[in-house]
Image (tube, rainbow, N blue to C red; front, side, top):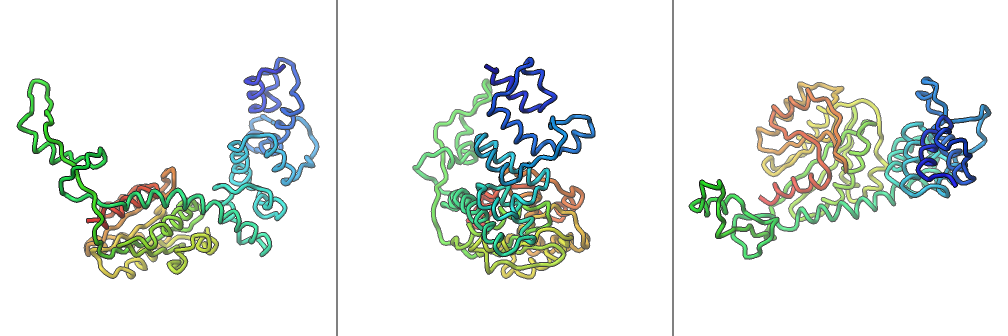
Length: 373
């Protein structure tokens, strides 16, 4: 019997890793897994250039994408299937995973497929588009279920400077506690003995209307941020004290606010790719502001400006000067891993914008903290 660990190494390395098994052959199931991996990773041009080949044969594979999806679903656990599908779509651009109706009808919706649908929906005929919408609906529903909880948590009462008898760690008022107990400072130990701790109270109070204006770069590199912006906007929609706008832009500006309560419809209208005119979008967002001191303008972009960077900095500076909050996000997704033009981002920060990367939950908390003041 083959050692499972050695077998995994053999599957990872392909045919060049045959020595792992000491001359033993793979059993039938492991050989099927190896063939499925060969179908995908055997096309890796970088490995071929380095003389590394996964495929042992020289003939063309007769395996179709449909067959391959059936095989990996049968042979691998769900997490591995999702990784293989993601690599097929994003690494090797096997578009028929999301453009072939027979394939679409079989795949299990996941975030990688959602991104692929958004990138390729312009290639789909109406029949395929209807099937693709199923993927969008399911993944968005799962994101909504998760993010709605985070948003509701952020807006469940705001901290006010009033003592509370409810002694919860999340409501601990460190500043007031230290001030009240400074007389018990012990120089020998460098510690303050706390006799009376203080806590914030969280109250639901009347909130004056705030505007949250989300300006979302729909260039191809921002697809994850586009998805999370749509879902976050839907979660903010209808919250007390918040009026949400959602605007997508490339070189043109498209106001999608009328669809913000339906993130599926909104995402199906997004057109990824093209150039970028961030300054034009920022100017449009500035024009939406009704009460400057009760407006949060969130610019979600990688800040690679194809328009006029001087105009963009000027618009941001004017927004800050009139009392609006400007938040520049290089990423809005679950990982919050940004890739952006740091020079332009620094100029926006110098103009008074908050610049960084956030998860949707962190953005909701930022909005809640300002709305609740």
